[in-house]
Length: 254
Image (cartoon, rainbow, N blue to C red; front, top):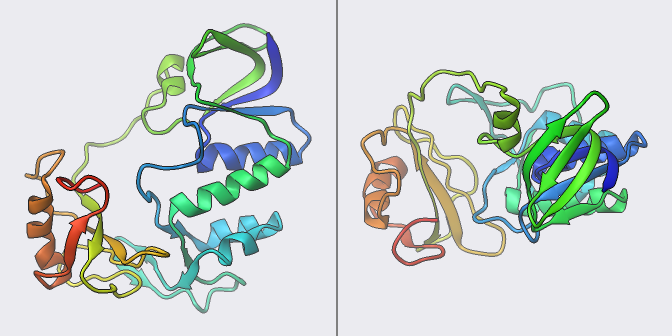
């Protein structure tokens, strides 16, 4: 059985950053990731905030992300836009950079630090004792570690198996999100044109596409049809035209 000081379940941004920090501290760490590569189904997160960029700068890698994205004033609180250009930091802005772009950059850095990533497998169980934890992986593999860290998302198997509660209140807002091809190049940045809504329409690097969301969709099915999204997004964007087609499958937003 292979042994490591730390096993991280999940190779997304949280798991990658933790692995990088541990490696810099000289800790033997391995990541277990179910995906075969760092590719994502969709663009996911839309950017990096000021404090995140400061941390990346402390690690000497901020320029890798800055060169791939676009800086903008996009901070906010409770749907209220905030201009942080006078904040006492070198990074007084938000970096517009899709997670599908910044996650591979982070993974490259972690690879340079010598952290192994076990791909196409996932943690399916574990057993803890006084000296560590036996980690059971898919494919009849297992690892031994001093610590197992669950960075496997909001539905974390690690959290559930450990009996750790995910306390919180019921949701009060529902959002509909799509990645779309547009008839014309959209305005870059965040556009808010309707009360109680905060749509974001921004150019994806290398393609005439964007994303739009609206937060009053509580009566919309969990998997809405493309026509439903386009209809509800019209008042959000202030126009009825603009969305040519969804990216991916022709019948529904991705």
